[in-house]
Length: 382
Image (cartoon, rainbow, N blue to C red; front, top):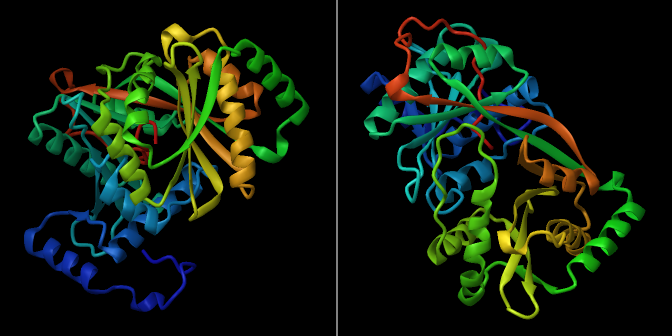
């Protein structure tokens, strides 16, 4: 499909990469073509499909942008990017779906994250089933035994589709947006004063990437504190963080064109880093920012560091990114402490998303006969 609003000579966009992909698909009979970062036209088709689906399924989500999709395929979050595939039904030259496959390589080696998107005009025709069968095939080929997929919690059709394949509802995450123009500044100032008084034993340090190795070393422990966040019934081992991974995260972020802002709280006497918060912006989305981790180590909790760090970040961003209008954050829907902090500083609930889990050794043997239902899914925690 072609997005007539994307500019340029639309009718001439089927260039060598697309022609090669179609020829390969015809030669092999495979309905899935992997999208590489350099495949500009295939990336554009991914973007067009994703944005068409978002307008139907999740209109509050930001549009996909070709450059960011391509860079994501090259760098990922920590230099271990996932894979995207375009799905072509039998006998067709027009892609009708996007398949995402991601499998961590540093920890949780039993796990695959997957996401499916089917064009809204072509649902309930078996395309989602065909894509799910590819997820199952690749997972088994990788020798992995757990699959996570997600959907909006109120999307009953997508939930039924997942359950048909044996997936079990296992957790849920809440997305909130902070519209900066709507923030109560007087209340924010009051909360800031209270948090500063409670955290008087700490100094706050602003740090943009690239971060010196010596500071990254100090941030390993507090970064790993994110493992204390609730995960519901998902089978998951703690993520492993070391200096190299923190460096890779910053390298990947820079490669994507992001500006990564971090504020951390250092205890004045011990010098230990007790908490940090991270926000990412990108010039291609000048009015939008994404909240990364906010974490406080166990022994430093009870000093309102989370509140203080997040408000200080708002102050910093107001100085250096004054064009920002909206910040997105995600929390486990039962993480009442962080939700209360976010609500207090102006975040408001957008939607709750459900995480479904499939343990392959417990999978029901209904894949072959599964009927297509509403078949648009989003990766867990996207």
